[in-house]
Length: 600
Ligand code: ADP
Ligand code: TPW
Image 1: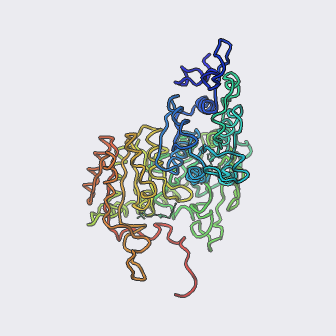
Image 2: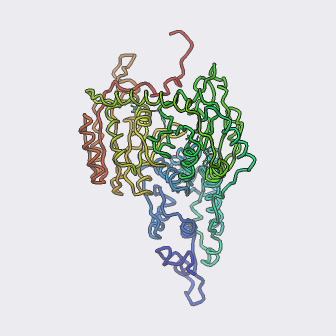
Image 3: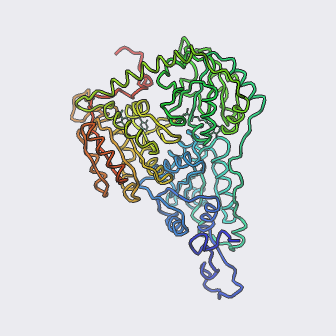
């Protein structure tokens, strides 16, 4: 049997004799034990657990590690800023159900990666941030080491679990614990601290091999209780106006066929959250997305699958749900399917919690449904269809317009057509108006094809997500970016060019954050805080690194540039100039801006 330090397996001589490992005074004889070291044990431990890609940025103490990992056959994708590498790892985790790995240097590199780690945890994406760190004894006595920081303590509150490995023989356990913590139960971010000294430690290769762990069943199924399933089905059966809400947990679960069967066999209308779009095609006749403001207050029983009743769902109460005041309950009964028991009752009472992994829960629900399930009344379905058809017709009218200058709608009508013609393409999306309009205008047809700002509404995921999506799927990526949003990770267009990734970035350029029209209230020489350089030529950034740049001002030009990008699969940036007066403050969530009660 090949061992993990077998050179044939790792693509590199991972094991060394004691002499090669540096003990020069020893004469290498037949009896010299084969040696390994911290560098190789980390690589072997990761490979043993199926890690084939690392997203990171080299420097002390991990530069050699990146070389050795590459030599050992791991794909090492090197970024220009750790936050983007971290975002790449996080979304790779979401797409693959395996922890995405981000690798950084100590203190500043670690901190740069930390936002992505915290964001991954918030969004339930499995990732492991591995950072090199400085000398423990100097850090702990605060004696001022190179890049000194107590990284473990800082990471701990921002992730699901944090571990540090001090001895080479513990590397296997450290990696195993990190993997289990990231993917089991509710997925999330894990921090793994590897001090510089650890990499250099040597160990007899055989002892090293024995210390590694191949994690068996890293994300064990969690079967729901039969009683809980029965309770949920009884509640659903008694509903007059049922609704199913699908969240990104449902997309993550990769139980696509069963989820679709559950929706179709019950005949219940459903609403997808942003990253659950495409779990069933957005054009599905049971989609109530275009009648959202009607179904939320009107539904009497709502089954939530892999979504949280957080701000994105107005906490399950208030006017959105038919309540009188902003904290009033609308009277719905809730069924919630989630792997994390503590999610239940977080905002409103959950009448029928179904705790388990979504695959197992949906399977159990399907089994309990049987063949004689009564579909919802024609009255409920008809009322939804009426609103939906009206809203769809209204939107079609808006999209058919061809205003000069181009605006969000006329540009996104093009993107909608392109995505329809390329349903396997992965859409990355960030911005405010650029986000909200894309979400509502561009239909998705397949699961896990829409990646966006998630639970925090974070800017800066764009290029990191795009790189990872292209790397792990090999598919075309289309990134629809507000001009402000793009700026947060824009330098990674070099990374996209370097790895020749099929990414087409479309910057919806309206000269600023939200819009480009604000003026400095004091009338001084500085522009307003939300305003950028007018007429910026973002496409030249892509050209600077050998990619294709296009400057477009009409839907026809936009269509041509996007079609060419997809045909050629070349890195492309389309600077789509739109009306600088288009868009609203904060997009759809303008009401979240605090307003002082004080009279102006
Ligand atoms: P959205 O933003 O789409 O509403 P959230 O991120 O708020 O979705 O919610 C996702 C939910 O899915 C979380 O509560 C998480 O615990 C749950 N979840 C994630 N993966 C699984 C899984 N495999 N099985 C069950 N629940 C899951
Ligand atoms: C890490 C606040 C939300 S949306 C946005 C900002 C700065 C940019 C909106 O302008 P853009 O889009 O991208 O040009 P558009 O279509 O409206 O013109 N910092 C972080 N995250 C968030 N969410 C912000 C700031 C914000």
